[in-house]
Picture 1: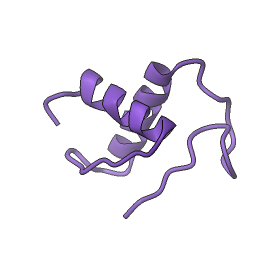
Picture 2 (picture 1 turned 90 degrees about the vertical axis):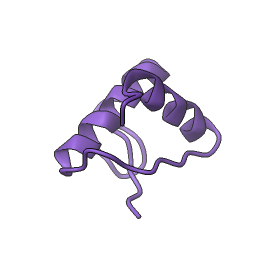
Picture 3 (picture 1 turned 90 degrees about the horizontal axis):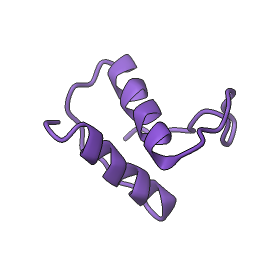
Picture 4 (picture 1 turned 180 degrees about the horizontal axis):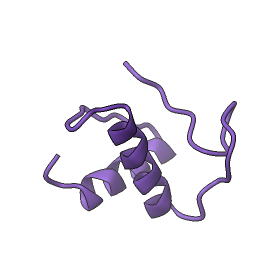
Length: 61
C-alpha cells in the first residue's frame, strides 16, 4: 500500500493544485514516477473525487 501526500498537503512540499483535475494529473505523474503502469486506486471523501478524475483522464489503466 502506498499513501500519497499530494504536493503542498501534509508533510509534502510544493503548491496545492487549483482543481481536482490538476490534482489527478499529479497523482498519475507520481504513480508513473514510482514505476507503476496499472494500480488499484482507493480514495475517501475528496480522495474519492480525485480517484474518479484519475479514472476519467487515464481510463485504460
